[in-house]
Amino acid sequence: MQLPFELWIGWRYTRAGRASRRNGFISFISGVSMLGIALGVAALIIVLSVMNGFQKEVRDRMLSVVSHIEIYAAGGVTLPDVAHTIEQARAHPQVVGAAPFIVSQALLARGEDMKGVLVRGIDPALEHEVTDLAVGAHSGWMQQLQPGSFGIVLGAELARSLNVQTGDLVTLVAPNGQVTPAGVVPRMKQMTIIGVFDSGHFEYDVGMAFMHWQDAAKMFRLEGPSGIRLKLRDLHQAPAVSQDLSRTLTGDLYIRDWTRQNRTWFAAVQVEKRMMFIILTLIVAVAAFNLVSTLVMTVTDKRADIAILRTLGASPSSVMGIFVVQGALVGVIGTLAGLVLGLGVAVNIDVLVPAIERALNASFLPKDIYLISNMPSDPQAADILPVAIISLVLSFVATLYPSWRASRINPAEALRYE
Image 1: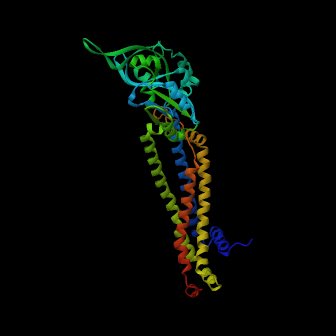
Image 2: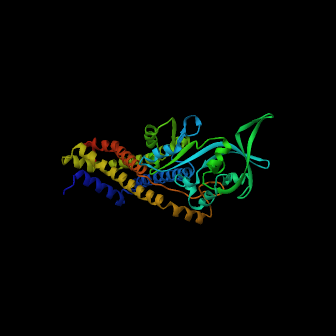
């Protein structure tokens, strides 16, 4: 099949520009433009993949403690019919687990140290359906949570700040005091630490404690569970499932999904990701618009060739198409090289970063400072595709002015001194 002559000549100019010694400087500028586009695209893909990786890592650690959906009784009272509400929730095809719970603020004291904690009363028999903390290495203490034993499980950072360990005694102070003739006396209960959990999320490790829901009900004067936690097949469907449950569940209930519990944090991450995308896109734009200088010099060098093409019958639009093809090829090659480089680094970042750390004898994410000590990466097509499209569009736009200038060359003027 015969290619349009504009495409054939544009491709030939691109190859000749790299191989010709006479046009060595033009070839160098063209190579720099191509390399700049490749590095800009690769940097965008790598940075966005790492940001996605950190977001996924924090989200997974958070969801090991926080459930996908929580159902409360309106007004913060006890759920009237827990079993019926769980049965209705399980009827939804996305719900794979449900467990009742009680949650309340309290104080935890050990000697002179006192810390505010969020106490969650759980059902050990059902908790494994909704949280990862109830399986694997943490299942031991979960089995020890028996009603009436008043055992408690603390977050790792909370236990460290109170200087306690498994088997020690702590005092739990409930917020609702007991009225006596001498006044309001705080309700206190001595609890035995039966385990310590480490979710990897500092906010929960430093301020959360678990106990059996029946002990929590006695401690906080409740008649039963105050809510139900749900786990879904697809956590990204949580907002839609919440809307469905709000229409199907009976009773005066309040439904909240995990995206609403941490809306501020996720909004901040999205803003940071957007800003990084804009900043790094400017790098691609600078590299793409280097094509302007490359093509201007090429047009100047090819004035005689352009004039000959015009005298042979080539239209101004055909001449313009030749240089659009030449500039677009540089953009396409640079973009493809950037995609290959960026994806190669993003996919293998778990191998490359440790190798660089060993070579430099340094640690980019020290364990004693950062909660996440490894460099995560999560390349997503939703990020990669816009990067490639923007790079190609910028490269194409950068070719328009030099190509238009080439189409305006007067053949007689160009050939006067040839």
